[in-house]
Amino acid sequence: MNAWMMLAGAIGAELAATTALKLSAGFTRLAPSAVVVVGYGLSFWLLGQVLKTMEVGIVYAIWSGAGLAVIALIGIVFLGESVSAVKLAGLAAVLLGVVLLNLADRLA
Image (cartoon, rainbow, N blue to C red):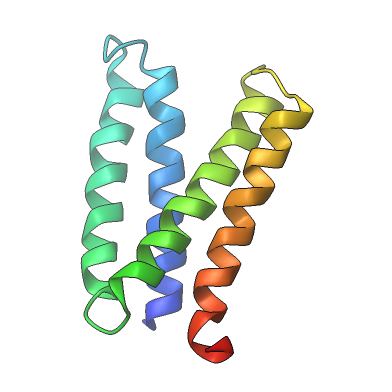
């Protein structure tokens, strides 16, 4: 499996784990709690594999930036969390930062 696919898998596993963390009610519900443990474990294992071939700064920026943006949208759309112009601007700033980090070597 190529590094980009593994990174996408790591992001997906982290998103599932973070969503399940919200649904676990402080680890009082067994099924969501199990998803948290397995999801984060899988996410970090996949990140470890990705880091064998990609730079840590780029990998972490993509993993954390994409995870942050998508989990915020999941919270807004599925979990009834608030949305505001400031929150959306912050998400846009994170995504812009990830794009700039990826372009840094090409623009230098």
